[in-house]
Length: 515
Ligand code: UN1
Image (cartoon, rainbow, N blue to C red):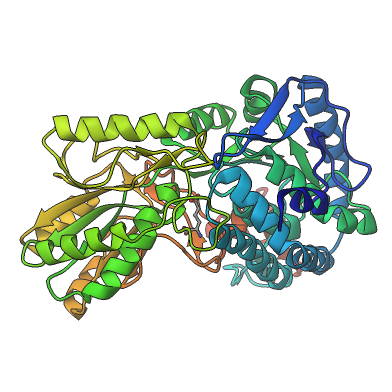
């Protein structure tokens, strides 16, 4: 699909408003600064957005508050029907939206389409979930008493996302929160405003049909006008935020300060352990996808390989060989495997990390440096790097959002596990092995300390059905599948006395004397 067709099909104008309460009538005439969305592919503008100012934020919040009050009255399976229709319109627009993701975020088109597929998958999941928002019943210790718990809609959920998964992460939150009966206020990354506008346009017919304006809201704006007000706003009981650990600490502090809830999905420093008996071919392929895929800009990207000394040379040689064959270029070309980084800052972050690791004692085995591509001179292309390093180097301990892969050698499995866990982050992890002992140790309490731990599968590319998130500085949140829905609802424990007496719990007698 060519650029103009993609934009037309998604209702993207040359100049777009930056706030909506959803549906075809929900767009607000925003009056904030102009935000130009440029493509990392060629550094050229795609379209512009007039950002929301404080007034637009307030009017969206008012509408959302009112909309929540009626939406929560709708039975959950009916809300599920709405999400089912959202899945239908997403299927229709998969090609266009996936292409826009590639244009605006710079990931290759196959991955852009994969991201839209994640949206469709979570929508389907949410439809089923709408009939399964189960609470428990428990046996009361008192006779003729019934005790159970139920889950109620929570309120307005603030969703703050990063550029690298501009549409999927919205859907994990918004579509699950939707069946839970919440309203959603979406603040996308200022790097990817157009994909956010596109989502609103795609779902507009469904919003119109069901008259649910105010449920799926979008506010594109600066940190001062939108970001900070969201964090401080007591009308928002839950903030779900994806981004760096530094950002998450701030979100946690501010929202925690008002005792609001947070769902934080922050930095990762994901490793694959390659044991001496691993299937090398599989390990290489998984490493390539994990480290080079999305140009190393997933929170689940593989950043460290912890490899047994007896197979290190073989592994590194095969990996270098594989890296040499990676076609770097325009992510819209089908043969491209790696597109650009998101912007110039990402390129200098990568350069700085590579300089630092060499200073700290590391050795670049392959790649690094920028690439100037014909016709795409203003794009942000780099060569993915493989670096021999030690786990304790300060730069290895950090998440650099770029395709840098550190190779760390080990001799004993205990040592491998110690290296593995000895980083501040705890998102995703993997072991490639054919040993049941290594596998089960890795998955046991003695093994990986991450929220995601895989065997003979790389660190990235998780399915939506599981709970997604991680421990330590990754923030502890869980979103997407499994029972992650619970954070979008409030739990209520109910005890009902259907007898004619009033026994107290714990056997307490509390009678007026003489009775
Ligand atoms: C992210 O990078 O923020 O597991 C999300 C994965 C994707 C999601 C990544 N399903 O790599």
